[in-house]
Image 1 (tube, rainbow, N blue to C red):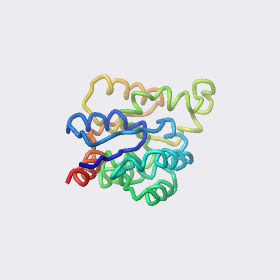
Image 2: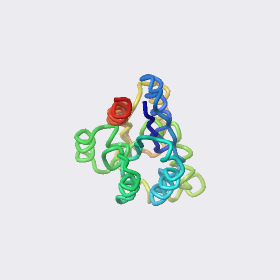
Image 3: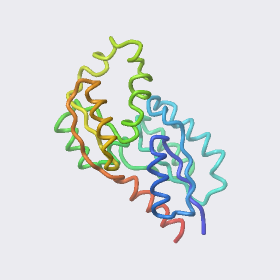
Image 4: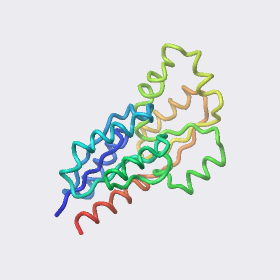
Length: 199
């Protein structure tokens, strides 16, 4: 039996680990890069390339658990270099919701700020602190003034996460809509890779 390396965004670490445990994927190893790269997409491809250069010789197959994520095709270039596939779509919001659902949400309200379970858990650090809104609240209108609502794409049903999502939306002074997506294409696409490896 071969082994599969799933290398991806730290924002997916909890979900990837849950999928591995639930499905008893013993032939899968998970390595995640710093989730803070979510705010620095220009650095993602270089970090991926370095990590894969160190790891790829030990695996029969590699799957990149990133969508394009604002890299302008750079993730695809790394995937081609290491003969790997990646998650479909432009970003995690799309592969969680699936393309048709995300397209409908975006068309209904282009001025939407999206949250996932990870971003709800780390909203204060990744949004408020990383964007310096805690020290410069005057930047808030510039950064968020064009948004009209928050859509929380929920991977799991969790009442505490719902409360935290409501708090995040209130912090941005925006109404909240909750759409339960589950793991979406993250689950199905990783499963496809696992089946390839163990077949």
